Length: 276
Image (cartoon, rainbow, N blue to C red):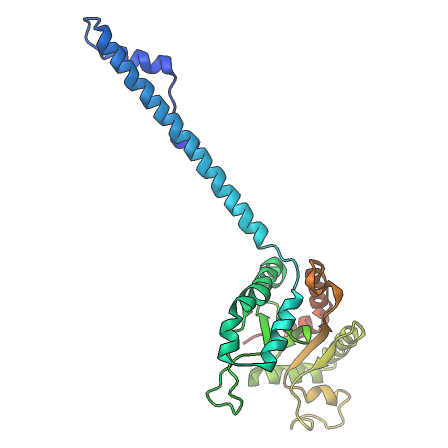
């Protein structure tokens, strides 16, 4: 802002003004010209001041916005909202409590997404509305808020039950399933998955995925990793419920810690299955 406003010294401006006057030493004309010069200087200073003030105001507003976006935890009010929604999943309830959803559920999760983006990538919040076109259950709203981090294959969910975190490959194509089975069956890579699963299980996570009832065709039914060969997708997750730290800044630390603890399984899947 200051670079665009040049305030010239008064003496220099007066000298420049005097040189443009006629040589008749008309004192009244000179005085009038000086007044014009002084008014111009005052205007320039005024513009400079207001420019600085506007710059400071913009900086202050920006600081306030950054401060307002600092993640401070998942409020217990978010869990209460979903508990009430489970009891009254209606448009009337949603309309009357939309502000609660926006402020107590969506806003904190958006803040968390921004806070962890550098490590886990951008998170996508799922819409709160259910697709009921072909569903027998016609309740219009989801009773949880989910967030998917596609870059890191991580997931987070808030509901009446509390906090749920997960990671892995939920939905897989036929090509991904084929790569998964080959890597499991291979004695060079399959044992690494067993070690990864053991590590995340020891850390308190459950390992799940879509499974067949029997070993798929083309693989030995007596294979030493027959149970793993039945998987079509593979995930790990943990339900935290509503610990004391959920509504505090510590929630970010605990969520990040949990996501990192899933890394052995997610990294194995990234290396041997990959995204299509």
